[in-house]
Image (cartoon, rainbow, N blue to C red; front, side, top):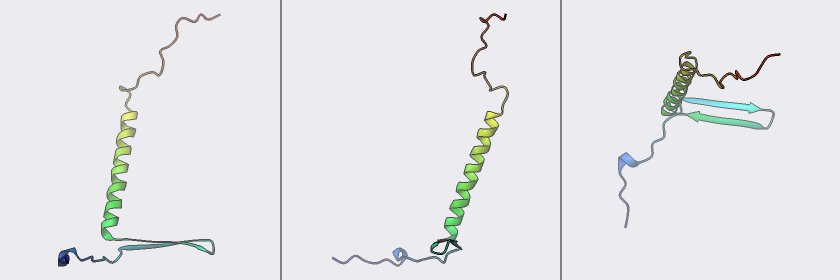
Length: 79
């Protein structure tokens, strides 16, 4: 039985929005290309990471929420 082909399901490649080529030494090269959708998803991930780290830093900096790590030891005698 033959599978029908639908025009919407045919693979369409997008042109890359960004290309990067990194060369290390004489022999090693790294090539990467990212589409527009990939750039948008990377931007969303980076912005969510930065926002979440800002919330963590703000919560850690509150004075009212701080508690001492250990209670002071008043049983010691000086001298």
